[in-house]
Length: 72
Figure 1: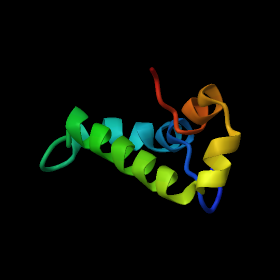
Figure 2: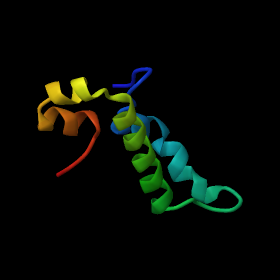
Figure 3: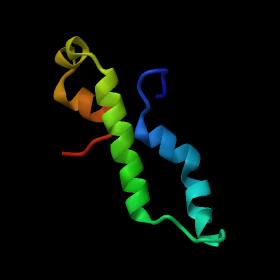
């Protein structure tokens, strides 16, 4: 699910994963796993900032976990 406000990490990663994987063949090499982790953290931070407190109160923790692509 990708909306103007919330970007679901799994959808974004699925879209760009092949491009990320082929970076190792480019001049300068791959950015590495840390770059992917940093991007995921940035996306999650963005999503949390867009979710209003009232929206977050209405979601069960499992729903919020799925929306933000988090694992407990």
